[in-house]
Length: 466
Image 1 (tube, rainbow, N blue to C red):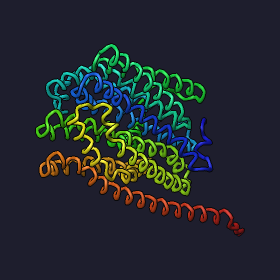
Image 2: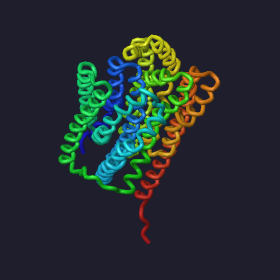
Image 3: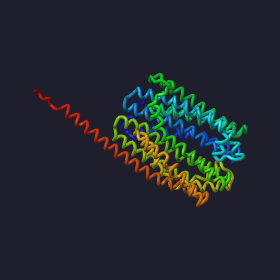
Image 4: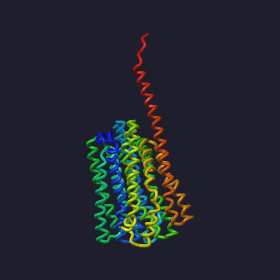
């Protein structure tokens, strides 16, 4: 099987970097579609267009979340199959992932077109922002299958030891998006519709490349891309990947809630501030999630081959890498926040409010990296229940009820301070779960050692002759 040697690379840091860098860039490129559109419409259309991108963001995040659920779930199963040297399991995982992608992603445009008014209103769209967001999404949701399968195919290829393909396909899409956005929005003044067309075209290009590469790989490696429902494989993919889905979609849920809570207090300006904060903070979360996701194929392979010492080393190196990278990025973005946010917000009053709010939300940001490592670690070793609990813990269990209380007591400022409070609690919880899982694996390792020792004694014991 291709790329097998990367999973057994003696230098764990080198192996982790080979997966982490493409992982970071892949997620960055997927997020850039909305971010780049926000930049261009903010400069050439106006503040309401930035608000429209904020409304559209949860829908786009839903598409990404579904594709990552299937992609990460399938990739984790594939990596374990490689560690177990089980090619039938690998083939079954790929065909089931394709089936799930067609069925689930295919429902997104259908549901949106039927319930678009209700969905946009629920996300806090009003007046001109409603009109702009609907015009944008009417085009963008058509690309859900293209974007979704770029991620699914990319994670499948990465799980088989070749992360470069995903890096190239997503980078290709992002570059085309920037070029076409500049032409349609900046030069020809097509507004939000131009940004939407740019996103659709770029996603089609990224999909075309990823499909070509996985089709070529399937011919060479002897697996089939035709969709097939296998109950056990499909269930396993969804259970494993569901934590990733929750991590991705929870941000969209939070944005929708914040828009509705803050709209009566701050009006459309509050929606614009939430959208701007989200765009800039995405740069920071992308790094953490990309490195953690990059760890997953390595950790899953080591778990599948029962190499627990290497598994522990992979987790330790990942924690060090995310802490270092997130701290450096945090310092840089704290310092350059005015320039970054000012690149797409020109209204001086809104800009100053946004900068202050943004710095409040990320004041303890680096420590949250441990929480995300714990989620992907639990997924890697088959702890779907723990991974699910962790995935809903920060945003759904802690943030949502706390932000309602904080806003009622402190107004808009309370919403911003809710972030660091939940980050501190989540980080401590992540440390606990990682420690607990490592202790359980140590017990499993000792039990396996005793079994091998007993088996060896039985084999060497002399046979008595009656």
